[in-house]
Image (cartoon, rainbow, N blue to C red):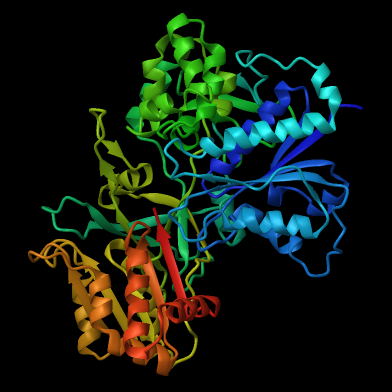
Length: 594
C-alpha cells in the first residue's frame, strides 16, 4: 500500500490552531507523507467526500463559536440535508485547542467530532482537548494525542514503517524564497484602491481610518493607563451596531525592528519579491515588492512569546554545541517544563530568544523568516460608541497592557502600546481597520429592559448600547459598573450621570478600593435582587456581562442565581435551569476575555 496523503484543516482565531496545524504538516513531511495545510474556509468542503485522511484542528471563540475562518465550513457541515453516510470513506481526527477557564471549553472540537461521526466518518482517535490552563500548556495534550494518531495511521498504512523519517535537526525546505531587487520602489498596497472601490472593509482590505483623538481617561496617578481613542470612518462603507467589534493589526516597535535587522544582519531598506516553493499562497497584505523594514514592522510577530515550533525550526540551524543542546531540549516533549520556565512564564519574546542564542541567529537564512515567525494577529476591541450619537466616528476604550516578570525589561502589550504611542495632534495618523459582528445582541423591542454588568473596560460595548438605545427612545436600561476608585477609573462618569438625570438609566456602582471592604459588581447585583427579579421574571429583561474572564463572570452568575432563589423561590437546580434557558433564548449573553 502506498503512503497516505494527509489534509490538515484548521479553524484559528489567534494563530494557535494554525501553528499546530503547520506543525502537524511538518511532522507529515518528515515522514515523507504528502500533505496540505489550509484554513477550513480556504478549502472546498464539497471535496471532503473524496478525501481519505484528514486532521481537523480548531479553537473555540466567544461563547462556544467557531473561529472566523471556519464559519462557512461550519454552516455547510451542519446542514440537515447532508446524508448520514456521506463521509463513510473518510478517516479523520479532531484536535481542539481551548482554555478551561471558559465555560464552553473546546465546544467547537467536541461538536465537530460528534457531527463527523453522524456523517459516517471513521474517527481514528478520541477528540483531543488541549488546554491552555495546563501547567505545561496545550502541548501536554497535543504531544500524546499526536503520537497516538500517528500510531493509528501507521497501522492503517504499514508502508509508513518501511520509510526512514527525516532527522529532526535537518531543515525542511522553506515555504518561500526571497528574491532581492536592486533600486525598485515599493508599490502601494490595496488600501488606496480599497477606498476608491467602495467595498466593505475586511481583514484583507482594511479601511485606513484617520485617528482624530487619543486621550487618557484614567487618572494620571492610576497604575492602569486607559485611553479613549476615536477614528473618523466617514466614506468607509463601515456600518455597525451595539455589540460589534473593530479589528486592527498592530505594528512592531521601531526599536525592535532595528534590533531584529541588526541581529540577523539584514538591510531594512532592501526590497524583495516572495516566491512560494509549494502550493502555499502568498502572504496576504504584503506589497510587492516589499521592503524588509515593512515585513518586520507590520507582518512578522517578533515581539510574541514564541511557541515550541519556533525552537523546533531554530535548532535545525544551530552549529554551536551548547546552543543546539538547549534548543533540542526546548523542542522535545521532555523539555516542556524547561521551555515554560524560560519562555512562557517570564513572557520572553522571540526577539529576546534570538539575542540569547547569538551563534544560531547568525546561521539563520532569510528564506526561513516566514517559517520561523508567525504573522502578527489582528486585535479586536468592543466598539464603545454608536453612530447614532457620533455619526461617521468610531470609538474604542483601550487598557494599555504593561507588567513585570523576572526579565528586567517591562512586558508590553503589542497593540495597546502601539495605539497609545500614536498622537494625532502631531500629524495625521491612519490605522487600517475593519468591523465584525460581535457576540452581543441587544433587543429590538422598545419595551424590553436590558441589564448590563460591565466592570472596567468591559463597559465599552454597553456605552455603545446605551447611546444606541437612548437615541431610539429605549429608556429601560440598568448598568452595573465596577472599578477600583470613583476618582481614578470611573470611565464615562459624567455621561452616566446625565443619563440618570434624564431618566434613561439606572446606575449601580462598585468602587472596590474606596473603602476598607472590597465591593464588586456581584455584590451590587445581589443587593438589587428585587429589581432584577421583577425585570427578568415580569418584564422579560435581557442580562449581559462583559469583562475579564477570571472570577467576575462566574461570581455575577452566582449572584444572579441567588436572586432567582431569594426572590423567585427557586431551588439551586431550578435557578441553574433558568439561567441555561435564558442563555438559549438570548436573554443571557456574555462577552469575556482573558
